[in-house]
Amino acid sequence: MDGNSACCSSHWFCLCVCYRGMMLSVSVYLFWSFIAAPSVSSEGVGPAPQCQPGWLPFGQRCFAFFPVWSSWRTATTLCSQSGGDLMLLHTPEEKQIVLQLTKTSIPVWLKGNQNGSWFWSDDSVFNNWTNEMDEKTKKFGACMQMIPKTGQLQSAPCGDLGFYICTSSLSLSSTDLNSHKRLQQGIVPGLLLFDDVWDSSSVQAEEIFYFSSLLKGLRSGNLTERCYSTFMQQEELYLLRVKSTLKVLINGLHEDNKIRSLLLDTLRQYRRRHQSLLPSSPTPQLIQWSLQSFHRVVLEDPVYWLVALSARACLQNFVDQKLHQELGPQILKVVRKNSFYQAWRRENVRFLWVKRYKKVLKKYQDQMDPFKAINIFREHMMNQRSLHTAVVCEDEEDEKIHNRVDVL
Image (cartoon, rainbow, N blue to C red; front, top):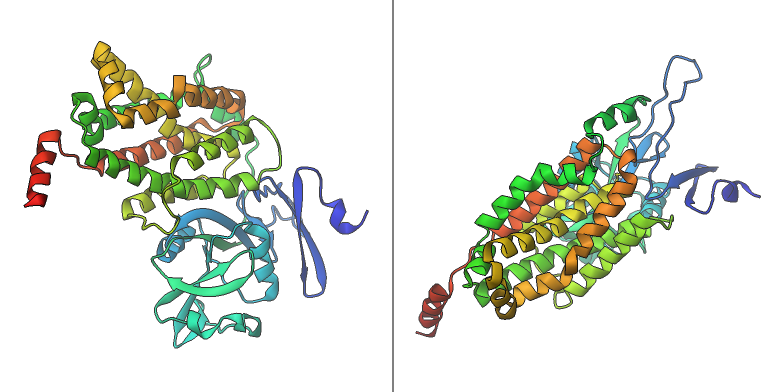
């Protein structure tokens, strides 16, 4: 067995890069997760510098790929919040890191800028191997991207959305062996973590139910087509972007288990929802803000991806139950009359999705940080609140007046 094959197993993959004549092999678990055990330096002083969990070490730097839709400026900010910066490319070997980390055709932001000629943001000029950029890509005021599958560099408007790679220096850190035991003290014995997670955000769900214009119209029976169409287009744009992120995350998983199965089914569900929209459709700022919350999730263990995705399904479940409680027998009229509610029911038939999320999270809850799960779920429930409250609906009479004015 050679050096390359020795570092790989059925659920590991290897990043083997030739760097200044030396062959480096880096094993990456699941979605490029690298969790270094505490090590002692050669002088025996203490732990050696290492990368944050989920970041890949190479040389004296750490790298992390974030399949999160962001503008160039937002990507720069999010990298900074994670203790790093957007990735610079100075050597062909660093370019290979991008190609290895990013198994996607979606452009990836790099920290390049242009001032007559192209420069990296540390004011160093491009190396010769970057001359594959043609003149038409050098548009003033644009930011730099790489097409991962080809390695091609290009410029793009800085407000466009793309994925990104962050880089940071190695840092000293230590592993607290008692942290797992302390985390479990946050779960009341005999209760499910899923229930704690939901209880922490039930107030937000109540607010959505009573303050969403869309749901107000649904309860009153005066939901207009204009309101319905506006909300559905907004939600489909959101799910279209989430679908791309989810696809990349799943492609990085090599272990076939209940988590991966549920993620795949969620991806199929999202694919069926938005066939009419193109990836190039403009993405409103509100949706961009909601997408940014995935920055804090994608490097976590995959079970936390399910926590984030479950917020939308739990809200649907909650709304359906509340409608039945408030409308009673009148709910049948709502079902027959309103295409939005019919679609919502079809997507969450018999609360299947909530039951599945609950079952999987129960299986893995002993391995989870309850406080992290609660915060992730709450943030994504707040995303749902933002999407609902952003749509201001008219009732049927207002829409009739509006339509008459349009005709005149």
